[in-house]
Image 1 (cartoon, rainbow, N blue to C red):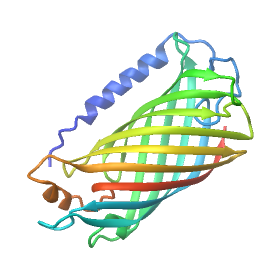
Image 2 (tube, rainbow, N blue to C red; image 1 turned 120 degrees about the horizontal axis):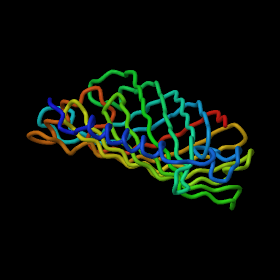
Image 3 (cartoon, helix red, strand yellow; image 1 turned 30 degrees about the vertical axis):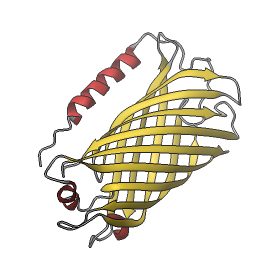
Image 4 (spheres, helix red, strand yellow; image 1 turned 60 degrees about the vertical axis):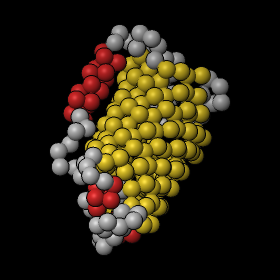
Amino acid sequence: MTRTFDTPALRRSLLVALAVALAAPSGPAHADDSDTAGAMVGGSYFIFGADLGLHDGKAALAHGAERTAVDGFFGMLRMSTGLLMRVTRFGAEAGLEGTLGLGWISAGAFGGSEKAGLSADLAGGVVVVPYRSALVGGSAFKLAAGFGTDHDVDYLYASGRLGFGETTGAFGVELGYTYRVGDAPTGATLTEHKLAAFIRIDGFALGAAWLGGDSARYRGTGESRAERFQERTLRKGEYTNWLFTLGWSYR
């Protein structure tokens, strides 16, 4: 099926925005002249860890069938990294972030007669920190946007994050919201919302997230027909996920 979601054009637009943000006249690497800023995204960081997710959804799995329950679990080893590179003329720190994940999805999460299978996720984008404060151990508001690809879709994402404990070495917290939209070869369009909380205690990183998604906005002759063709995909129909993360954080 031919894709109509123009991800190449949107990717080019993001690359242009990135070039403008990073090429703008800049000052020091951090707006506060501090090399200690950044528990999560507010500076250089690297996180290696494992994600464990619980999948619950409804989708049409057979020709002419009503939507039925789909549930199972999935897991992924993930490496995430970020780097703030400069301060723009507006005083906002700007940089890059990226993530690479490899994992496994249970047969139950796929639904139907599907077998368990491997999964992958590769994404990267731009990070901007328009606000930073010395309060609460150093706090920062961050905006990020980028694109990626995984076992289901090519997607774009945008997020807002609020971090605390940015300049302390022992404890940090980050709360965030991420919106993701993507296009699958089956013709389905994914829309997903993610609410997440992330805690860093010394070097340990603990996280929990709730994801709510809809992969039922199809281009075709009907939802059940489009859902049937989404074989070997985790996100089909309407679904929710709980995601838990345990890892090691270095900054």
